[in-house]
Amino acid sequence: MIGMPEPRMIALGFGKYVRSDKVFALERLVGDQRGEGRRTRVWIEGVPEPIVASRTEVTILRDMGEEAAADVPVLDEALDLAARLAAAADAGRVDLSDLGRRARRVLASTTQPQLPADD
Image (cartoon, rainbow, N blue to C red):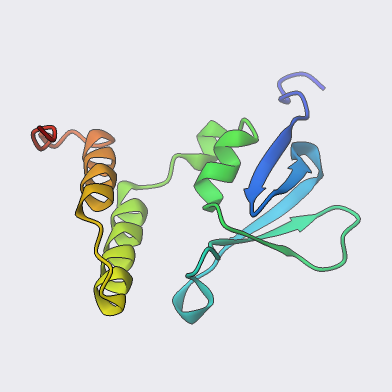
């Protein structure tokens, strides 16, 4: 088909891979469903139940070659970052280097000035 990306294998995380042309739906997990490596429910042609992926729907869409569909508002990424911070704080495991890297990535996708790089 004209304009359709060539099918490719995409990673769902946890050692799971699927052909990009077999994915027909993605659902972001929220609330108590999300966490501990659970990010997205992925429906695959020929598989009766969705697979839970450890990667976000945006990352999966980008890997599928669907950049336009993956361009979600920066608010979604910021909320995901806030959720990670809250969960890490609750667990007593706050990794400031990881959170700083993620925050800089969110800022880089906006027109806001970036924070200085880590020394």
